[in-house]
Amino acid sequence: MNIYKPTELSSINTSLLIPLYQKGPIPCELADYADFINTLDLDTGKLYHLAAPLKTPLKNAIILGLGKPEKMTGKKLGETIGTALRALDQSLCIYTDSVVHDGLPAKEAVWETAFASSFSSYEFEKIGSSKKKALEISLLSSDAVRPICEDALLTASCVNHARDLGNTPGNLMTPEELAKEAENLGKELNLTCEILTNKKLEEIGAGAILGVNKGSSHEACLITLSYQGADAGAPFTALVGKGLTFDAGGYNLKPASSMDGMKFDMCGAANVLCALELIARRKSEVNVMAVIGATENKIGPDAYTCNDVLTSLSGRTIEITNTDAEGRLVLSDALTWAQKKGACRIIDMATLTGACVAALGKNYTGAFTNSPEFLKELESFSQKTEEKLWQLPLDEDFHKMVMESDVADMTNCVIGKGAGSSLAAAFLEEFIEEGVEWIHLDIAGSSDFSEGRPWMAKGASGVLVRTLGEMYRE
Ligand code: BES
Ligand code: MN
Ligand code: ZN
Image 1: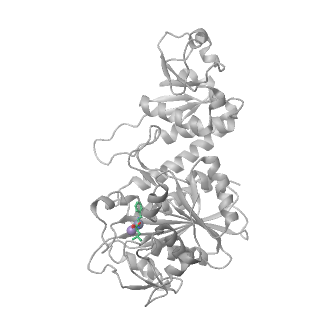
Image 2: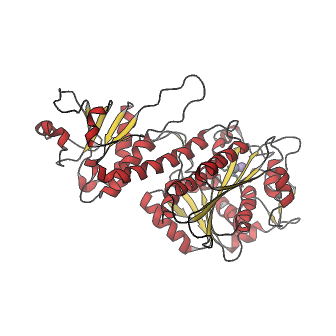
Image 3: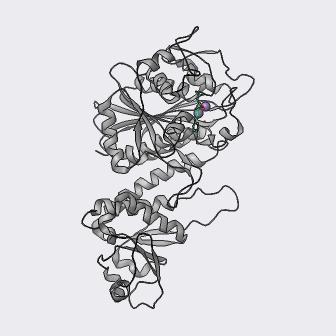
């Protein structure tokens, strides 16, 4: 996305969108219109097209009301800009300097504006011949705030990348394709990338992910993409993602209404991959790896079934009581692998349970942890980005229920006890070793929106890419 300097005003070919507060200062480009602008009601979201002939290099301008400055917050500003952008549905250049006021410093105001310009104008490009021509969105910013705009646009590009991966249908975004995405990022950003497929997974004994994979004609992929921005001796954090490129449920087949949307079951993987991309592109001084378990959950002559017992990479055995509780199986091997690779802090992200959507709805991500301090740290960043988290309970009682099996160490699904999200979290925690700090994020609700928002296209949301980027900005 182009960032124009004020001196390049005459080379901007699109309309300029100028956000203005009520009684706020009027930028010098609009000095000739000050009297007219002072008559406008600049309530939040109001739009005015300036049609008068202009003496300045400025061509068409659209004024966007921002309301009272003291009422504006970073998030509200982003939503206001985004809503206008999507409603106007035309190529635009967004003037960033007028969004700053005493309560909203440049770093926040300009950042949110630039981020919203890119995030809100995202649209998944249709597959086929009816492709809509992408709108041209750009920024007009003074040199002083250019680095802020650049960081915001970089962030948005990584969030939008995650949305693209999530929105791509399962027949195209296969496990191998997801692995290729990681490989390409590795090549471009000089990261270490390791991809284990079935033969190798059998050798190391990753029986949980392989069990889920048996109903799929695609190989399973255990992907590790590693970024070392700090000293080699500094500890690694692993971002672990659930990468079910399609979840039909297996022999515990999903009903039609629940199966629709299951291409989004790899959003955890997409989001951790693109969070790592953001961290690496920023050259943050941290050591972080993304570990992704990718496969499909389908049916077929060899697909796993209820009553099967799988031996996980950790050596522990799991009785299958429901083939649709596949995410925790794939994650258990990915979590073990991350620890074998030396991670001592882990954040996993997964579209894990419908129960999480029932409990928290679409706007909240469910959070579980074995380390309240670690979660507090994450929350300090998620509060800033307003990507909402809500902690749900996890204790011994849930572990006891998970460990009740007649034939194996544990079951993958406890039936008829409720608390589906906590039971899934307890299952995952069984694979966390002593001394490892861990957070589990259930994004089953927040991963995608079937209806979109006035400031946001429908489909995958890229949730928490931004928050993780902030946490590992350093
Ligand atoms: N991918 C689903 C969870 C899901 C449900 C995500 C709805 C997004 C929207 C997961 O693999 C699943 O099927 N979970 C089961 C677990 C159950 C069998 C214990 C569920 O939530 O029904
Ligand atoms: Mn499932
Ligand atoms: Zn699933």
